[in-house]
Image 1 (cartoon, one colour):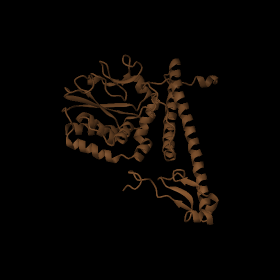
Image 2 (cartoon, chains in turn purple, green):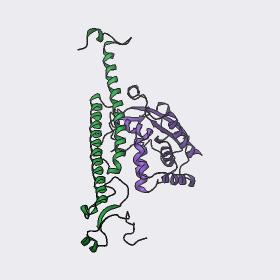
Image 3 (cartoon, chains in turn cyan, purple):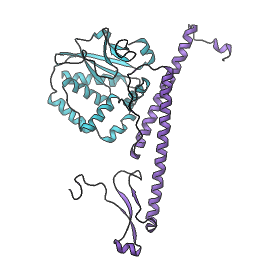
Image 4 (cartoon, chains in turn purple, blue):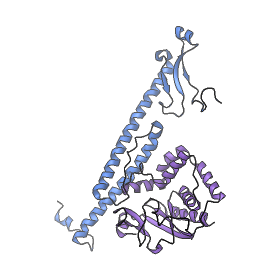
Length: 193
Length: 166
């Protein structure tokens, strides 16, 4: 973690794990789980979501980094609104669905990077000097993997040839560590189980 | 200007310039805490206002996540405080409107003839559903001529298939 970023946001954390990732569509169990999770969401629940501790922590953090969470939604609200608009959570593939379930279950966002591309030891949050200069990004020693809270950039994103993925979760001040661990465990379990 | 003996009180090991940095960090931390508190209060206001018709949403603005300067944090804090103030005002106004409608409904129930054909929807009362309270004549035209008035509550939301469906 960049020392300036760490000093500014002591509660900002990046946790990651690298696991083998079989490519392809989600198994029926995972699709079924997404369908079950869709049934948990109602309009009233989505409206009150922002008063819950974890979404509230992310909303406050968004404000603190210059984003308006009413315009650029936090990850858990973004998928909840998508669920209401689409009528259900849509299955994409095994990796994306695993990350989605982890997010729905814990409120902590999880993204996947192509592990062959990432210099794991140097993965961290820093201020970008090359891509979207001045932005907070997740990067390794070689470059910017993604802008904070955005999807991975091409090159680092998971592709058809990906065989190992680095799953990373972002947590902010106010999000208990157990939620972060649970999010990663959940995604890993669904990918490898 | 602070008294000299206050200015000399620095943390052990602190130099001349680091003292300034420490002050700004404290200010930034305080601003971040204020932003978090205002965000919580705004979220509560949003939930309170939702059944009343919701709050106006901000216009879309671009930008990437970044470290904000002290001035930018102040702008975010002030903007949130303003939005919270406006949200509370909106809630108060709508609550007053609802209280006024409830009062009218009570008077309608007591003296329907004084409120002929007046309609108050459940939404105006802050209640869920599509029902409407309406003062209508009993037995149609005869009731109108005889002065027989009553308050009726409509049956609720229309069926999805339209009139006569289901």
